[in-house]
Image (cartoon, rainbow, N blue to C red; front, side, top):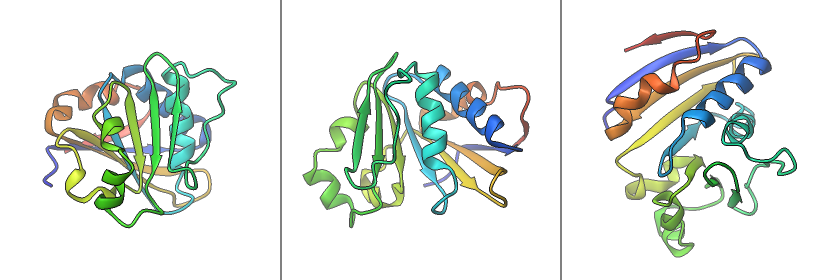
Length: 166
């Protein structure tokens, strides 16, 4: 799939990563899909925890990696559906599990290891690629697809981040 618009952000430390994720949660809308890519340990679940706080998920609902359960749902301003597709072989298993209901649901769907989606990848989504050159820093690329392209600037309005848009 072609990228409609992208931006790059450097996050200097955990505090900036959490603040950026929180901001994403505050601007997320019902029906949004965010695909998180990056190596193991890149910070995908940490970013999702911060997104959850921005969605007003209660602090008592600790957001964890759904690696073994595949899907966690958290109540907030809008529901947060956090999927980890790492253990799935591909789109057939995703269909069998009924995950399309969540992907096209009324919450924010955050998907780790989205390459497993194959043809089930929605047309409208924001991809966030995390690269972790050190344990503290993150290089982040946001790629907006479909109707998310016109909203990319909303996700970038966090002023204290260094960024460039292409």
